[in-house]
Amino acid sequence: MASRLEILVVVAVFIVALAAVSFALFQNPAEKCAFEAVEDGIKFCSSEKEPSALLKGLADSNEFVVAIYQSQGEDLSFAANTMVSFQSLLSANRKSTTLLVLDYSGGGLSKCQTNYGLVQVNKEISAAECGKILDRNESVFIFIENPDNSLEQPEVAVEGLKITLKPRLASDMQGMALVSLKAMFADSEETIKKINEMLKTIKGV
Image 1 (cartoon, rainbow, N blue to C red):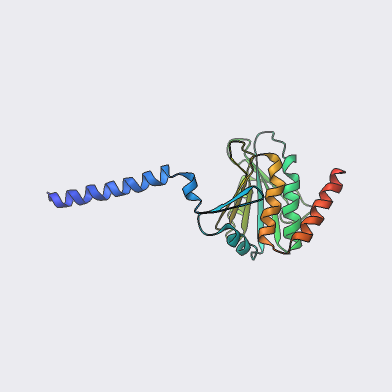
Image 2 (cartoon, rainbow, N blue to C red):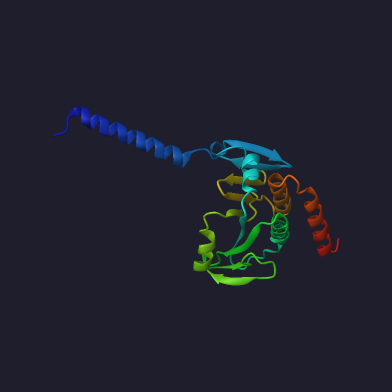
């Protein structure tokens, strides 16, 4: 028969474990953002270190995957300029850049579109093939989420090899991309100007 001391030890361990789980489940989201900064009205957040330092470090990577989510019948034209900006500036810095459109129209990931890192390619691939790209260990992933007007302000979360853009409005996306890229590549100002001029030309502005 277990002694009273052994029972108390087991109970204490259980309480500590329960408290740890409860803390993880109910932790205030703001507490997960241990390091934060605001640039041009965009909140940069990380639980690891200063977001600017993380972004500069990620700029040393050679492979990038830029992915955007798509649900049933959703028109992604609002995100076209953002994708072009990432593709253009990363390529200008000699980075291999794979674009992905993650199709969640069936509830889960059903298929993807990708350029396989080639500017003039756009191919539909299966969820399994898409998963292989998402499983790359050495690539930096830039995920662009759909606009969420419940956010107080647009946010860029930086964790490990993952950058997540969380726009409040569709109109936030382009600015978020350019500010993030500028933080990664300090000498990108002139390239960004050229990208903006090119996009204005395409729009006929």
